[in-house]
Length: 565
Image 1: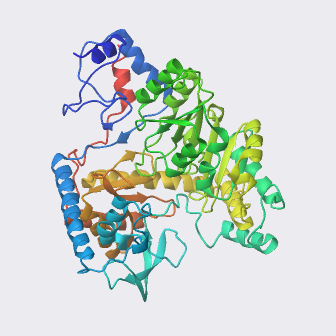
Image 2: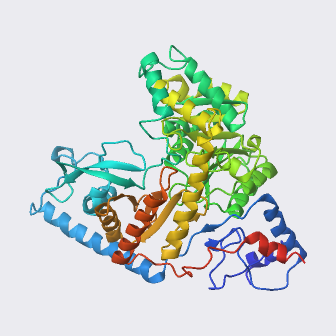
């Protein structure tokens, strides 16, 4: 036994393996897990029992997530596939250099050969030799509202995806399984559309000024007060762009001498904001509380590099729902660590606000926590609200400070009036302040659709990532050739999907990402599931080694209660 293992046992932790003898993760669970992985019977020390009881007490319901491990043969074949593509890529580059094949991609001119390269070599290589083969799966133009169904403009390529031409045909009523339209508010009819139309007639489309000059409308102030009530915080501030809400506000809060602890799977906007701030950045393993606690402990013990002075501020950056994994942040544990080590917490609820919780108030509502436990609550209006922009919520002192120091506030144009009205109307609908139960019905429908869709995919034998309650559903494809094939075959069956590969994901974890919506009917989901199953059989995508008709996981709390004696 190593020294590290011995120290863990002395602290009351356990070193265990699952039934398949897989190594346990740093959080006390293997990749296929619920809150705690069921263990074989063994003698336990009292400290271990209290450790498990402590974690169980933070959750009011089972927290079930699935990250089934990549089959070894699939991983080997995936690496081989990328290797073969790379070899042929170099061969084609050789042919291009000798003018046997034409290269359409941007490159430095001959007279600039002594300049520092404008394009990174590998990214350029990857784009022209791998991405171009499957480029037809992205940037597809649509000509309708991106609701439960949409109309796609048909394209054709005469030069193997280097350029596209419109054929003049339109693919009608394609089932939309890719848009973030969680509550179905992206629509051109109904209360929201009518209110936005009336607002456009009164206020126009644009403000043409910043909030600090002549761009502060009464609609903006109304939205900010409503958002604060919706979140349960003292004050809030809205911005015209969701990405800039992160990238421009984090630098206003953090700076030199500060420490940012960021989840390794955080969104690019959080990463950019952290880098722009000039603060020291340390990354912890995804949703791994032991990794985070180690960084917090080391930060307090050692302080800043070289000087060992205490950090001015320590900020933990997390997301509510991670958009590529479909996982939900372990917020109760992060809040406990934040309080224990006196750190600040920045929560990005771009995908979780409106999509989680019995009242649609996001991951805080989902876990039944106090909004005051989160120092900075951030979210976007681009998904569940069918609009655009973002918000920051928290204490009044925080928001007042950002009004003066945030680049998104001082320099950016104000949010468009019809967008503002769309958010106000949809938010009141979710809160039930429109006098109807439509908001609660949509929340319930989204939850039911998510549970049904995930369960059926598991039963079919696909490897699905994420939390059982997450409307983001990644279906693992792995091999590079299957990325393009899956998207094309689904479109042949009139299903619009999003496929994702390297570098947006790890090289052997390419996937299709489905987004479930409250606007989807059961018939639409069944049609999509039938098509997914057909394509899965065609491309041999049903990799799961679990019992397909068995249960997803063990009810962790029932297990804990049965072992309290």
